[in-house]
Length: 224
Image (cartoon, rainbow, N blue to C red; front, side):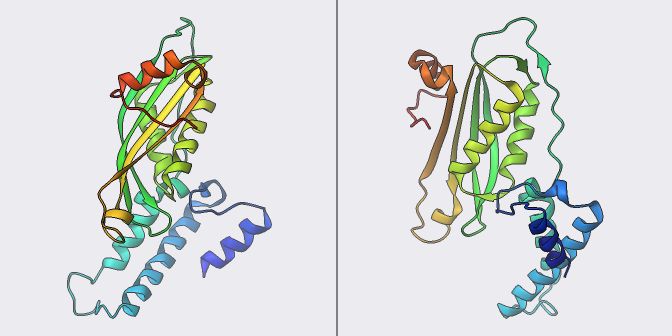
């Protein structure tokens, strides 16, 4: 199995392989193709173990291929796909006022049950050294969120990535999402979870933080 060979190589290099880690930099295009083919076989085995007759059920005939492609190229793509190209521009105009981007649609998956996390994110920035294009916030959010994870860690990772790109004086990231692991199973509860990360001026200055939260709806969030 290709996964066994890849695991041995990555472990020998000290590469961490947590569910929300990006490991694509250590895999070739051809290895990713082979890995997806293995995932197809594993999903087929899972369906067989669930006593789903893939041979005669026309709805399930190609499910193993669809699921493998979905995991590798869509819902978990943040683990395997290259980070989106983002060009930073120097803040030549010395912009120092808050701007807010959002709501950005976020789609992730709970690493406990591999079911969807669906919601929105808002990013507030008080520029520092650099600025980036408006669309890049959405691209970075999509790349970070497309992994199995918990929302708390995803929010921190998103803030880390934006902070590294922009080097802002102030940064706020708020994510509000519904978790299918709660609404589809277990308690079957439809409540949402809100997480936030505040850094720099938006963490230390209550007035700046209040301005950001007012922009996104006046909600009160616990800052990390």
